[in-house]
Image (tube, rainbow, N blue to C red; front, side, top):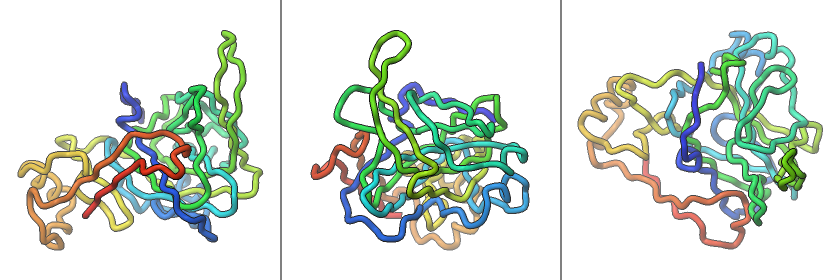
Length: 263
């Protein structure tokens, strides 16, 4: 399965930082943290719990301990051979394009910054929300439809590219002090009528980025009929989100984001 990036990737992918105190227990809050082995999912022994489709939003986050910055990577595969050998990475990223890892999984840093500015690719320790709008960019060299997020300690540095220009290199350390992974989930093709939803720990909700017309609600409840009986709201009653585009974790101490969600 192949998914393409948007011409404006920041419009498709927004990761933002909130300066909150570090947490002792580091883990993903959503998507759910991995419980078991990723190879259970690649082999079919375990079934993903989230019915994610191309174009959906995912709202979650993670918390990390100590004083190390965290670096977010996602990986995709469909190979049971790769699934038996998936290990944390020691890998460098110098673009948004992604590449194949030695175990033939597709690896990508979803909000890479190569600019020679003050904003890096890592996130300060503590709590960090994530808002991901879902094109997964695995190419045809992998089946690419089983994906998951990983957290690593890492570092940013500068190097010189082949044409002599400076470039930022983000390095993740799989043999560092910690490493965390989410439960894998299958990225399905787009739903009929291009229906998209927002996934949170409470399950699928109306897409924050879509107009909730009567046609949208009809498609939404057709896809998730159990939510119609549980819902007490109707068209036009759902709240949205106000967001600012920002990149990296250098916004410490600044009021960079106002988020209003009532799902």
